Amino acid sequence: MALRPTVYIETYGCQMNVSDTELMLGKLTASGYESVEQPDGADVILINTCAIRDHAEQRVIGRLGEIKSKMKRDAVLGVTGCMAQRLGSQLLDRVKHVSLVIGPDGYRELPSLIESARGGVKATAVDFDLEEHYEDFTPRRFDGVKAWIPVQRGCDYKCTYCIVPTTRGPERSRQLSEVVRETEAVIASGISEVVLLGQTVNSYYDGKHDFADLLRAVGSVPGIRRLRFTSPHPNDFSERVIRAMAEIEAFCEHVHLPMQSGSTRTLRRMLRRYTREKYLECVDRLRAAIPRLALTTDVIVGFPGETEEDFQETLTAIEAVGFDDAYTFKFSLRDGTPATRFPASDTISDDVASERLARLIATVRAGSRERNMGLIGARREVLVEKSARRGGLLQSRTRDFKTVMIPGDVSLIGKYLQVELTGTTGSTFLGQVVGQRAALPMAV
Image (cartoon, rainbow, N blue to C red; front, side, top):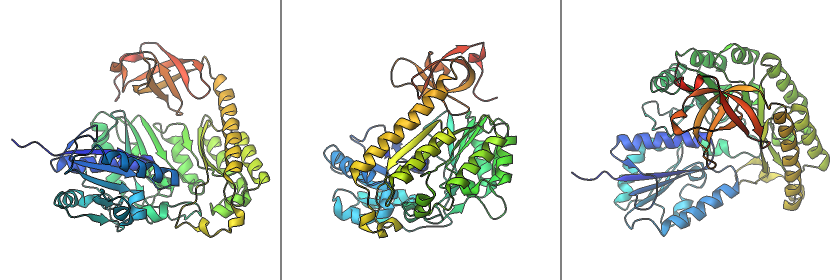
């Protein structure tokens, strides 16, 4: 019997890319391919890419060079995802050993394009398909503990720094019934935590139902125990959405709420469509409805024209909100974004941006450590996710998204436990299992 051809996919970027990799693997395994864990010797190697920052693209270019020296002579090497969408056929010219360039809406043709490439025909597939949601795909999920479910693709906001509208296209939402169907299948498989994905997930609208309707429908699926979503836009937290979050038992007390800057002047130049005051008002409304809500965020420093006064406003906003954590970045100029039209005199030097980033990180960490120290001795429910990278511990997570390292063996992965928080590194916790909850199954 002939051996099945093998495929290896390496993923960079956001959770939407992780979800897309699961879709691609599902499609290819259904088409007769076998997934492997290493690129060496694979018949097909796909690099699923991010284009948010220049550093991410340069890292992929370097990785493609590394793979060239290890891949089989007749192997097919392809680039998929946002970088593929942005560069298109330029990638075929730039990296000669690449045979396929496929954007996020081109995965339906993946098996046939691979077969053509194996016959020596290079190809690109970077057209947008506003009807494509891959409803008939069965994802091959990496994570046996939680499931990432895309509910929306693309973005209509067009922030001046962001390449996503170019790489993901305009916003479109799946039908509510299809999201519920996929959730039911996930729960039936034994997974009880669901994360709804979208570029601006809370602007979801399928023509009849808004995000509040979606939350209530998914939160009502029997067996679901934890419900999360990412990433929302501050402008789209209607009272209906906030009320649904507060009333759904499965909804976890955590929101990742991108701020980007605490300066109204900078936010306007970013075209974020809210002010500092409106952002803080959104925070207040969320916390009034969900008192124990934990918040994390994204922040960019060194945006063109950012003054020291603007940056100070970002620091004071960080302190005012009291974020549990923040993903912090130096501004990265992307071709095709409106920010390229700012005058060169607005450019912030790398030295200044780096110094501001260091101050920002220090402010975030100081606040996070102070809040976490106050939680020592508290008891929380955790879901055990995986083995930790070191120390012989397990990584688990609370409902409000705090990471807790606990002792135990792999048989506990996927189980819900009660733990006491016994220590903190400032960002993560150490915990000790209490009571008799260790025997509970994952799904209830």
